[in-house]
Length: 152
Image (tube, rainbow, N blue to C red):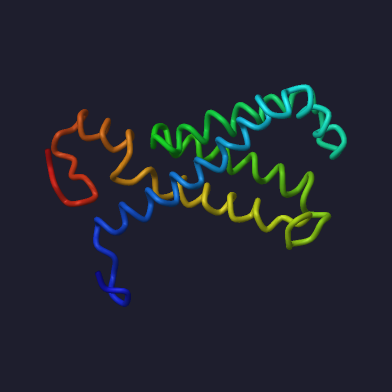
């Protein structure tokens, strides 16, 4: 493995998988928290206190997008669609809640910006080789090579 030369297809596949899985775990954990730790009533109350519009609609919607989208990223299933929903979610978090706190945590938007960029990268790159999306693509078209350059 060269640190100076171009990445091999295998390295690219592993890199995308790392970004996808870790980002998915973070989102799924936050969705889980909204459902099962705070409860939807607690999430609605928190969204209301933060000034998020229509909190009785947005809080459950965000909880579903984060939990289902996070799980989808972990598996690598419908990755681009899930990542797009999560990117939109982070745009809302940044502009409705975090931007007033500046850049740095704990009140700023730095964490949400990283999740936004990770999500956008997955919209552009797709799930990568180690994913359900790739397995489905290979089953549909046996001529499709995986990220390692192999054909089934």
